[in-house]
Image (cartoon, rainbow, N blue to C red; front, side):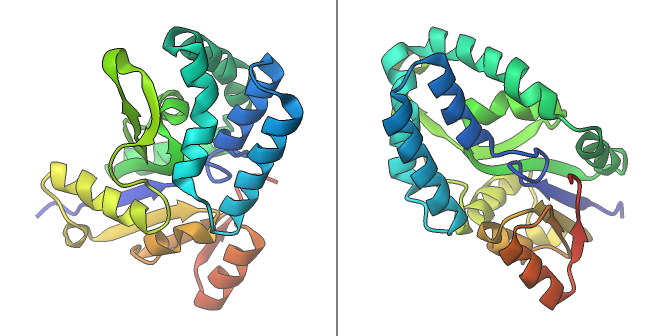
Length: 225
């Protein structure tokens, strides 16, 4: 029997030294698409909710997609291309890419599992060379227009576990089919997923996750200084 291993990466502050969701909001301010003071205040408030593990993700998705819905998809896509070039590309660090490639070379099933929406993260996953993306799915209307609502279970906290299970099912697999399961994350929001791992790795961990990792003897990895 061929041994199968699974590797799941969080994105923000794990493989990237920034939060792509929050950075996208800051980029919209730079573009002049939103009121700097009001949008910046609300963007920071939602980010603080996320860090505290109390994010109202439905309200956040409605808020963060409103400028896209107002501008339309072609203009939004053009803006995202600039975002990739100006914000994301300079933050694709060799050590993060090398870690992804290491697991891919081993033949692991690799997926990016993030609470950031698929509009923001699909091009980032592609840039990281990760084919399988599990992200918050934005509901789409006619012509692919963004409605401001979430489709299905959001990949946030316990929702990440459910979405991974759904993804595995599409490939005819379950958690029990893997000899080893690696999960990399910086945040205690991902404890439900980390606790499914045989090899949980607190990666660039927040103070809260660092304390948990130390108490449980988990591996601690600092990709970024």
